[in-house]
Amino acid sequence: MSRPPCFVANWKMNMGLKASESHLSDLIKHCADVVLAPSKIIIAPPFTALQTVSNILNTAACEIDLAAQNVHFSPKGAYTGEISTEMLCEIGCKYVIIGHSERRILFSENDEEIHKKLVAVRKAGLFPILCIGETQQDRQAGKTWQRLQGQLNSVFSEEFIASGLCDTVSDWMIAYEPVWAIGTGETPEPADVAEVHQQIQALIADTVGKGVPRILYGGSVSEENIVDFMKTPDIDGVLVGGASLSPKTFFEIIAQGASAK
Ligand code: PGA
Image (cartoon, rainbow, N blue to C red; front, side, top):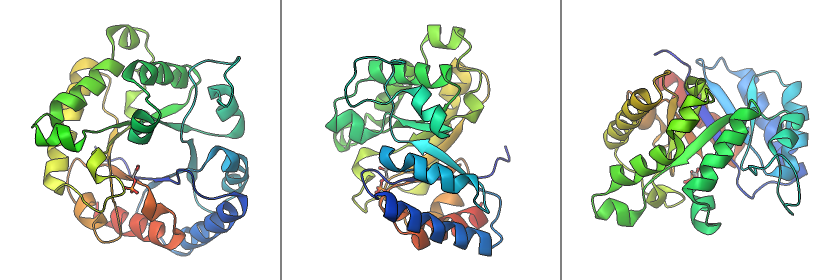
């Protein structure tokens, strides 16, 4: 499958309006100055910066898609502090990160809620960047695949598949992010990641049967390890947190990663 590799920047709760503007103008300048190997770039700023970032991306010299970091599953109503899919579409988002481990762990999001978000996102014509990952405890107990399988099966219910909302699955992203690797500087071996990615691909091919999404790796991706990850088959891209906060570093990750594919 020859899809350009994908590089997602998750800014998390960082970057106000001014910081977003200057970061993006730097990143766009780097991207416009250099002939990059084919690549897909996605930026997920905090909610308050979405409009500013969207305006800049609309006139940017290089193609970068906009993602939100979260969404509520209801179309509207009395949900103080929440944002709907319609609001995200209005602002120009194409993707939404769903099920990030920080949302699962720190904000107690469960598989049922994640499933509802996925349905809402697809009904709105947005595409999910669905995060799954095992904890250190799962890993030590030898239950990595059991955890990932559970997270995937709860999402790909028979009803959801029958609804036709998964027919676009090849345009989705699944980010395999071991919880123990996020923000820790510790990473799994690329070959182990590739094995997990193959299992994810096989499960989706078996259950959904409409093609496979890009499977990204996330967790302490850096300028130092990007080439090793990206030269490994079955790693279709990366989801980058901390290292995406510097435009120069994120650009290096894209440039080196894309040419390693
Ligand atoms: P990190 O975060 O790159 O800072 O480890 C990745 C993520 O949380 O998606």
